[in-house]
Image 1 (cartoon, rainbow, N blue to C red):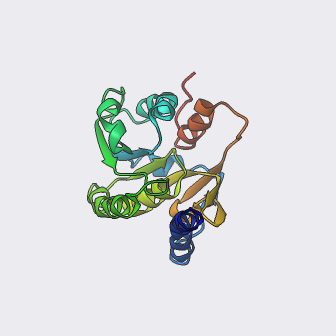
Image 2 (image 1 turned 90 degrees about the horizontal axis):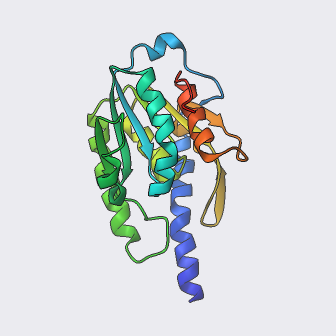
Length: 204
């Protein structure tokens, strides 16, 4: 049992290694600095990332509505876990739902297969040619997906996260703009913080 536990922690440490390697290739983000309004005016296609459970996605729906009001003419896609996608299509303000297979960082015997499926799905995001990506999750697999999408503007949160034997203070180099949230604030308010960074008026 101890060997299995150590092997699991080792597997969960691999994203930390990937995070450190890609950090050498990326640029540090702007911390708590909003993109200029002139830059935002050119946004025509947006990817919103929420690779969490259904309840967390529901708490993010006010931020999604706020971004729809901010960009009424933009095409907005929502990226969610595969299992959440059927219900995510009912969220207002979303033009299309994309999905990624997740779960390769949690316990279970299908980590390698899920990780390979996740990697295979990333090129599809890049082909969409998004102008703006907002990552509401701030996890390794969500921030790396934001980076892989290749949008010139990528917004995400700064969170302290454990990865196997290690921990990291966010994945800022995957973003162009990183925002430190108030962990004591309501979950929906923390999601609205990212929508506000894109120039949206928070949804009450």
